[in-house]
Amino acid sequence: MTSSTLTQIGPVGQPPAPVEPAPRRRGRRDGSRLGLAVRIALAAVASAVVFFPLYWMLVIAFSPRGEVFRPGGVQFWPSQLSTENFATVFARFPVAEWFVNSVVIGAFVTVLTVTVNLLAGYAFARIRFAGRGILFILALATMMIPVQAIMVAQFRLVTGLQLAGTYWSVILPGAAAAFGLFLARQFFLSIPQELIEAARMDGAGHLRTFAQIVLPLSKPLIAVLTLLTLLGSWNDFAWPLIALKDPALFTLPIGLLYLKGQSTPDYSASMALALISVIPMVVLFLLFQRYFVQGFARSGIR
Image (tube, rainbow, N blue to C red):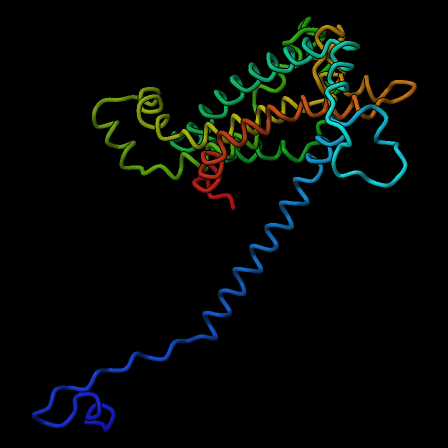
């Protein structure tokens, strides 16, 4: 028996001496606190960098007209809150029609794309068929093809189908996305196989298993696909500009081009219209950010 043990238990016949707690490792704890403080500082700096363009957009949009060129340097707060820029935009341009067009096209593209990606992702994840791996690799390979490289062929296709100049010329080409297919497949692979086997033992086919077992567990995935697809469709500019001929069908990004293309650009009005275009997406992300993070986490993407 060592001397340290004798010191702890004390002499025979006397109560044991209290055991002193082990010394704390202050160096390691202080290092973890320092690391946490550094991460918080970096996160705050990154958040400020990301948020500043939106804040600057708010400042210019609610500033009086012409204040952006006022001498005296950069102004980080409007000298007077004004909605004049919004009134000017709505008076000079059909902003309401552009907004409705963006909503209609975005809604149809989102519904079609999410539906196709969910069904195809489940097929690639849980249904065995010949050539499954090759087809999946080919689908992913399409992500390496620039969109500009297929615009001519895409335009000839919608023209041949007599869809040019309509909503469908923008909706149908975006009815599937390779990244959404990959995301759905990875998510469905994370669902326990035991649930699928239990449904099959109960006599459920693939469609019933997908609708009653898999789909209720896929809320985070649906939120991710919905946000990504809607964001991409909402901000799409090049293809709607080519496919839509009637100005009454233009979307908000094309409307921003109209303001920018004026002989005397109105930057305050442009910021007001840009803010109208950005706010819906920001609100949707804030509402569904929890599902958004869960969807990426369960899909194995970090």
